[in-house]
Every structure is written in structure tokens, then in C-alpha cells.
Length: 495
Image (tube, rainbow, N blue to C red; front, side):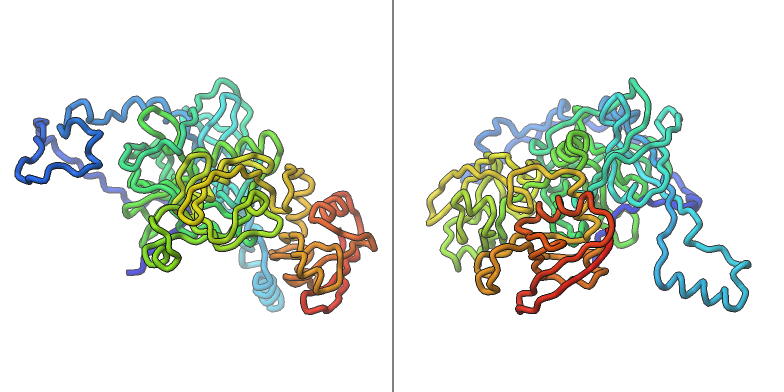
């Protein structure tokens, strides 16, 4: 059976939990904990990587106690209920116009105007009411209601949402609230015990336990037109179900190490694996919203591929570590620092990276202008370079919220064209539309690849120019430019 990944898309929408059957496991008595002596049957002894472990005995002291972590965190996890109205589509208009024509409209309800309820979880991260949850829990919500573990109910406002990490921050007006302290997801070990705290199936204050099964998992569920999604999930076998979205993943020191977001399932319910967003990414996203009002994404400016045995043999790479640099952006941080195609990136600030998702995670916790130490291997020799990270536009400046809003309205990712392309087209300035999503430009007829040379007869030389020209613009806008096939074009739209 084909395995598929599904987001925990806020689960409960007005239905009842069907006949729940609880099975009680009888007391089987206390088992005696005995030491497990090292086998002496093999003459070749222990593997070399066991050298740091002085004893193989299993001690009673190693039996985990989950009660403290549960008690310290359960009151800081909230139940979230949202309401939203389904957005209309062309099909909706056709469907209801059809029934209007036959006079049947009055006998049917219009789902476009009927609020839909959905539920999820959230984690209180400050005593004054800031709560982190999943983007998919609150996106498009017209109303967000938060119920605390003590049954108090608050209406929340959305501070910010980030589809590229599936995180959101909301706020309730209260003080002296219990909250969970941040841990460090980089220090999380495979095999370490963790607890998932949330509200599956509307069952409030539910705690489940499991271990960290893997780190830096990319399960390809955060698809966005800009291609900037960060997927580096913590995989656990703690039971997580619908309604757990946005809940806490905590270690046995009662520290927040992740925000639960997804499950691997053939049924839509938990079947063995769940996935959480690392807390180091969570911390950065929260700080961005609180300090800047928008996400500050940093980019290294490389395209990479992972290394396996056959690829290493093909490229003459001696050991299978790191990620291979397949390309370098013309105006990117990597090229400016001296990284070239064919290099192998081994670590970022001393943290090893052996997959694309690990590289994305370790760059994603930084902002434009931050300097990171990147260790590369070139010609089988290691070298550490200082890399000043840049934003998508190729500069080290932080993005203003107003400018970010302009780009959302335009529905476009803009970048400076390569110098060779501009030379071929005979232009000296311009901004190229790298990708399009739903927005003003696509509605006006602009296609990907179009190079904007002027806006309202004023020359454009950078994405920042576009943002500044349009952020306070009211009324009609005339855009002119050229496509890579040398076809000139003009587009008009309103702001």
C-alpha cells in the first residue's frame, strides 16, 4: 500500500468522536531489572565506537519518569478552535447561479457563507499570552478561540503566519500564564525520550510518549510557489493525531524541543510516526514576528545535491559526508565568500550537515546580514569560510513588513537577472519575475521570466525598487519590460 504524508489539518469539524473503546491492561507484576553482561563469546571484542562507554549494564536509574515533564507542560498547551468561511470559486458561482435560475436557491444553504469550525493545539511561550501553533491551524481563520487547560476561554488575534515553516504566532490578553521554556533542538539525540502534549480529537490535555526516531526529515508537505519552504522535521513515535497540530514536543527536562505538525499515515490517523518542527526554527520565527513584524529569511545562494556512494565515486569524493554544491547564484552569499561549484559543504557553525534539509535548517535560523562559518571540502582538503548571508534580493538588509506585503499582493518572486542575460537583451537594468502565484501580476497577464524595466516610466534596477515604488501606490500602474525571447510587453493594473 502506498504510504502518504498528511498534515494534521485541524481534525475536528463538528463531528462526534465515534464510540471510543478503552482497553485496560492488567497488572502483570513488577519485572526485575537485571544487568546485561558483555558477551565474551567473540574473541574480536567490542567495536571501536563503543570505546567511550564503560558499562553495558542496564540500570534502574535509566528508567524514564515522564510525570515531572507532563506536570510542568500540560497547563501551557492550549486548545484552539477556529472559524472560517470557505472561499468561493468559479465552480461555486456556476453551481448556485444554476439553482437560482430554477428558483431553488431558497431551499439550499450556501456553503460559501457557512462558517466552518476546525480545531488544533497551541503552546504558550510567554506569561503575557503569546502562543505558537501551526500555520495550517489558523490560516484564513476569521475567528480564533483559545481554551486554556483551566477552561478559561479567550479570543485570540493572529500576530503572524509563515507557510514556509508551517508556523504561526497568536496572542491572547492575559498575564501570569504558565508557559514552556525553549530547549535546543540541535542537542536532541536520536533515541531520546520525548512527550507530545496536545488535544487530539478534542480530548484536551493529552500526553503521549515516544522517542526521537530521526532528525532533519524532509517529507515534502510544505509546498510554496517561491520554493523557500524549510523542512527539517524531528521524527518521533509519540502518538499524534488530528487536533495535535500546533501542540508541544518536549524533552524530559520539560523544555520545548518542537511543535507537532504532521503524521505519516495510510488512514488519516496515527500509524507509527509523527513529525515536529524543531524549536530552533520556532524561536527564530517567533522573534521575527515580534521584532520585525515579518519573516526575515536568509539565503546562502547555492543549489545542492546529497551524496551517496555512487556519486562520491563518480566525483572522486573520498568520504560520504556533507552536501555537494551543484551550482552557485551570481549574486549570492556563497559566491561572494568564495564557495564554488564542486565544493562539498560539511558544516555550518560547527554543526555537521549531511542532507539538504540539515543545510536548510541551519541556514534558516539566521537572518540576512548574519555571518556564519561554513566548512567546505575542495580537492579533498577542508577549508572554513566566513559567509555573510543575504536576503532573496541579494542584499544584506532586513525586509520591511510593508514591502513584504507588496510582494504578497503582486504574487511574485523577483530577482536581479544575470549580467549575461541583460547583455544579450541589450538592457542595463531590470528585475526578473522568477515565479508567480495568485496575485496582481498573474491576473494582469504577466508570465514567468518577464523582466520589468520600468514602472510608471521610472527605471527599475532591483526588487527593492519595485517594493518602494508600489508600497504606497494607489490607483493605476503601468509596467513595461521584456521577455528573454526579446518580446517587449506592457501591462496595466490597479493597486
